[in-house]
Image 1 (cartoon, rainbow, N blue to C red):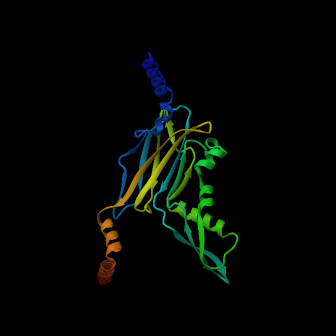
Image 2: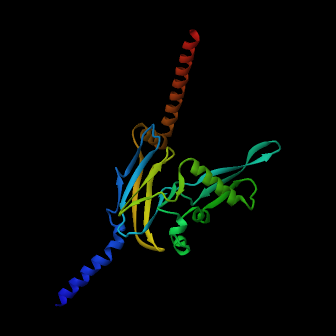
Image 3: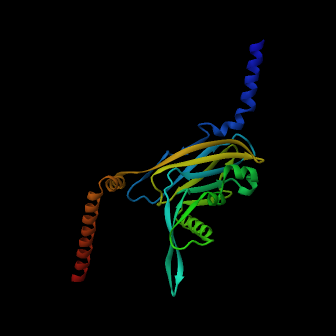
Length: 258
């Protein structure tokens, strides 16, 4: 009798609880066609399509994609000196993702309440609060943080590395999908895809995936040569430059002869 009661409780647990967590299962978010981006010498970007299963009807989705490797970068600020625009300041920016994209099934303001937004730290404002900006050249000013951060966003969006898109995730019944673009400025490393199923300000489930970008072929060989054999890489670069110069000169000389 006692065993029957325990079996009944376990059965009810499976029916009532597990569906709300099914998005967190290993098979709930599947990458198509593979979990690697291969960047050859002529890599011009790639689009990966994600598919997933949403077990809770009426739930919305929020996806955040960030890079695992986030090296600091340097930006310059221009100002008018007499009649010319010149670089008057230089900054080092750290604690900011190299790659950052946010997708949702409807407007973020309709999915995330204030508490949930503060917990997940979604959006550019969260990045702005965390970013660290150090001045390397020039005189500090009160608006440096705001101006540099806005310049960073503008540059990253132009390069296809930052993006926030509402109403982007397609939900059809219990299935959802979205496309993730990796521009030609993508660097080697891991990229983390986090997905939350949210309804009425409550997280019903979540999942996390990883996709790796790696150089292949000649591109990989040149990178390894530059990192581990810098002298040979320099010699190789000089030889290539001279060869290209001679080839261009030969072509134009031949045209002049006609």
